[in-house]
Image 1 (tube, each protein chain N blue to C red):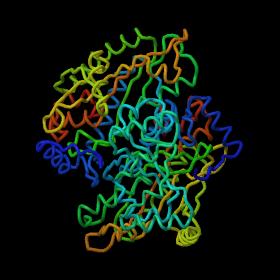
Image 2 (cartoon, rainbow over the protein chains, first blue to last red):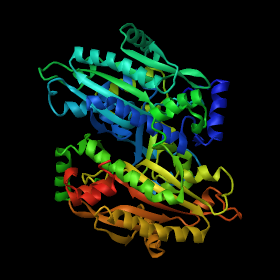
Image 3 (tube, each protein chain N blue to C red):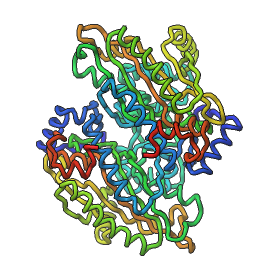
Image 4 (cartoon, chains in turn green, orange):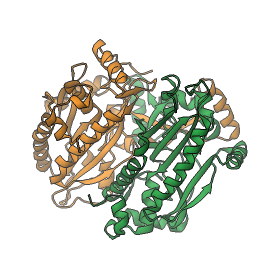
Length: 311
Length: 311
């Protein structure tokens, strides 16, 4: 079993309250919940608000499913940095005899893993990952590069926890910029202000953090320090779960990593730079519930208006 | 590798046209596509139309993620009937040495499956499956039973194909009835008319089929015949992909299977009966594109109006 990240007592209590209010329903697996009507309506309202905020850029919509080609995970370098977070899809390829044996074991909850073979699919680790090879396959970028929108994509992170803000699968909405270096750097600065304004308009108390990704192992600590030194990642942090501050939005600058990995080129033949603006939708909902209470009817009128909850 | 279900020449040509029009983008894995803006806007418009159609029943919304507890797949009997369609989630649990070895193999696209362990999660095979244990955990049903709405849930079916209507992961929207026998039987009859009317209002040419699920192996053929004899499944079939008729909606009556499996009881302590009304959202979009053309602007005004595409 992977490391279990136990929630603090108030995070666990908060999860109980969310369940009692019908906002989330437990499944029996940590970090895997069903969302009730109120939770989902706020999530979709926030998603629509991101759409309105990004509209002036006219991003190209490209919605990938929660499962992507295994080859992309192998090529992207993800398994070097985050082997502990990845999920792979296995499936059955046997005959009727094997199916019967598998079924017999599974029916009594014994180990049937030997009957499962690795497929050509993995769970998507981030909404923007499958965009880069898809755009690279079109040839060099148009002049000025591209801005893309992943829609409300599901992503998977193997991090079992009873802190409701740490789910194993959740929606990440990303706006992505693929262009030359200066354009991407400038774009990320604009979105830093825009994302902060958007979340503040919902009454969230925010802090900006220069952050790092949860890289694996000893080498990972070096990578994290490097990422932080170069300010390649920032996060907007809000009280989310039992009042604990958690990242609800973040932006990564990958420099020309994906440009080199997928031979993704600008119109003048240089490796493209890439940056992304990501919103963790379930965490935004949790932050809103934490700030304004579990009954949406009691939320401040200006927050309900910003989310167009009364339309 | 599982059996590849090759599309007919006109299905493969239709996929090319969808890709050229930017409606779908290939990922390199058969049956795994990204959806472009037009495709996704029609899918969401249809999803909203189902919401409006089901509204008089006030179904309870319960949205499960694409990944559900493995124990539910083991308990439900799915692996007896559909072992070939299931997907399981594996993950890494090793140390830094193992991570380095896994990474080295993966980076050159060699076999790294030995480093992956079966997790407690599987891909959801149907939108309604996780509902039954969740509702059973609440205790006996209220009087009159329950009607539930899964939202636009992702489901996984291991069926690689280059027929665009056969995706390995897609959205299934289900309305589900859990109650006594007569109530469920009556409800399914009502939805048969309602679903047909809904899809005809979009200009689709439909046929109603008494159908069976794709059960595995020799025993499966018996189960399929039985299901058909008892009329436990019907489908609404429309020309979808290269003009070929494909199921775009279906309804299953599980009798008291889930009632027994999860001790799901009516208010008077009897095993509950369950039935579901399912829409394959990507297939509905493909049927609409097939019927009205790839340019949404050219669609009949009454279809655009029914989908509220001009709002």
